[in-house]
Length: 255
Image 1 (cartoon, helix red, strand yellow):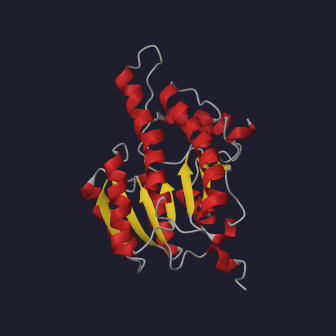
Image 2 (cartoon, one colour):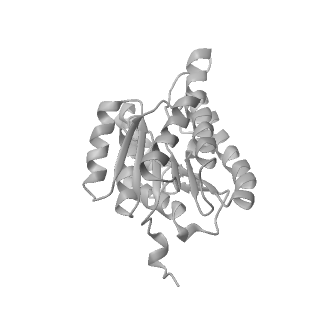
Image 3 (tube, helix red, strand yellow):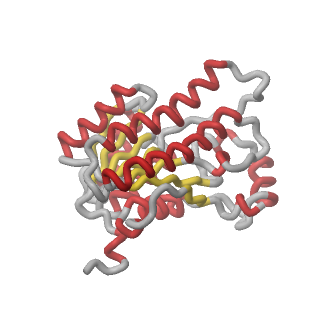
């Protein structure tokens, strides 16, 4: 019988992480490796993927880097095929690739809106679809949503918020379709405010106001806190959990 701590181990698992060239994607890749998984990483920036690969391999786990644009169905399929060919399986998907904008709704162009939806929603779907075709029972898909799919934060982010709300709906439906029939759990993490390329563009006074007025814990999240939640949902510790959207937000949704 596996003990409680053993349920959190990803030893012997193969995990794919998209958007792994920067920020939270790098943290996810490294954290899954620390939990015992071999990791396949995908992103558009090949040079930065190599740095992530080095960080993963420092943990003693294997890592494969594949240049990937998740908005392209064929890239998603190629990433999964490379994972199976090199690592032998796909057990975990961290569907992290995403972009954000802050464009007023009356000025946002169709191209700007479609780009966000194409990566954040369509890319999440194409990756989940490609992985589910090869995943074994007991596998786990963790989609990365956002609390901005549930609330607002004072910035004009219609495309981003719409895409992340849609990811929650997508998560529920895929869980309903795949958990009972295929044994694949599908869940969603909803991060609050964590340091990322998107938050790098926030003005300091805006961040300070957010922390004071919207975040009960009064600070931004540490990436390790989000990674721990991802490892939980990816592992057998969450073997009876599917179709949920888990906020990791320091209490933003309480305000």
